[in-house]
Image (cartoon, rainbow, N blue to C red; front, side, top):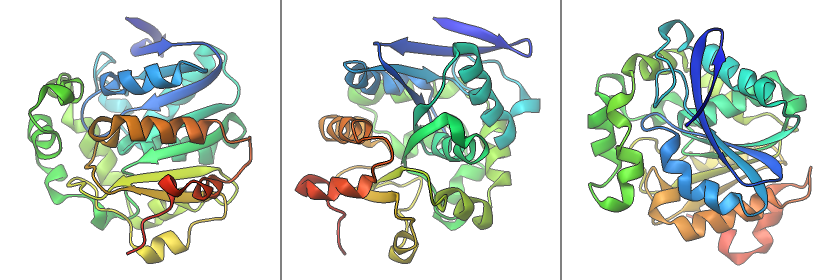
Length: 262
């Protein structure tokens, strides 16, 4: 277990590999743990990090830091502690919100962002998120099978005040501003069977900036990295190996990543 103190509070993280830094940010439920296979895949050519947000996993329960600003400051403090320059951010659900918010606040430190299950609007969020406890949410989105144990194992540790604080801050103007960062290289991934966050509408996708792209995983729910790990990890590596500044729309040249047309 690796950790450091940020303003006197414990931030837990893990890392694998060597090379340019890639940071994995967990979502609404669970912890860093379900990123292990993705970290292993990335660690062949990159230094992969995953951390626990305030109130999740082994990081401190710090209810005064549960706001989007507080969680984004945690990520900023992590980069400072590690002495990192430009990084790639891989954010799932809530982690995607933090990743894009960090990119908006600190653009010089972000080379590219990949989100999975990012909510393009408040109405995309399952209303059960506002009142369910973490174990109920994990039952909603994760099968009770050994394959998904990495997502289920730390669910009970989460302080649901962290989730609800973030949910209460979200509005359509904020979310639209995050995914409409025109000069940011961004890839959006969404499982079409996601029961926690509904996929974006075609009109929202049509408004994405030129440096952004959406790829659907037809056979995945909220956790495509667990539902279809081989396919997800191929996409992850393809995205990470794009030349800096190159649009992820160039992934369309590969038939496998063409956007699903309804």
